[in-house]
Amino acid sequence: MSRTDAEKHIQRNPHPDFKKVESSRENWDDSLKWNLKQTIKPDWKYGDGANDGGASLKLPHISIDPYEEGRPAVANYKLLISGIIPRPIGFISTRSTDGSSTNLAPFSYFQVINHDPPLFTVGYAGGFDNAKDSLRNLTESGECVINIISEHFIEAANSTSINAPYGESEWSLSGLTPEMCKTVKASRVKEAVFSVEGKLDFTKEYESKATPGKKTGVLAVIEGTHFWVREDAVNAEKNLIDPAVSLPCFLKGI
Image (cartoon, rainbow, N blue to C red):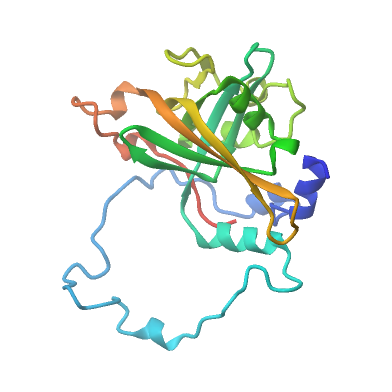
């Protein structure tokens, strides 16, 4: 099954006509700013338990076997992405070894997992036999750049989700600006407030338990080798990024 056919089967987007859905929503509100608030119960003490007075204990749970007969794997996908939120987005830039192919794509299976050394995980859907352009470039060159998406280029970043043919660059499709790096040949996104140059540590391919023999995912562990932070977003000690300036975007539900 091709990647295009696989996407049609998964039906990742529950809104066939997203622009129509989007037009029914309220306009972007620039008056809303980043802010910090107290917790719901700031006078909570050790042993108090949940802050809802026990209300959640009165509601039953449903038991779900991820491999129960008749349950498609896509049901687990949709359950997980709607239940594990918010999720950071890794906006990954890669380049083939000979430079003939560059790729820029967002990944929601992404996380930082260590700081010494700086380590990051990226999860790719599908196996090496049907690798996305990003995975092909990453495994071939062993390098990438992880960019964090901010509000001021969310539309451009989202446009790179398209399944463009191998060799066709998402840089031109998005209108974003490639900028040279120090330790890798892949470009960073100049519009990004925070970017991390990285070298591939290792990959591990996973096989479906529902359909033995089918390769369903690849985990990539990447070591950060250099950081870039916009000057107005970082403190003098270069150890804190102000979220009120970076305004990072994340995924919340489907």
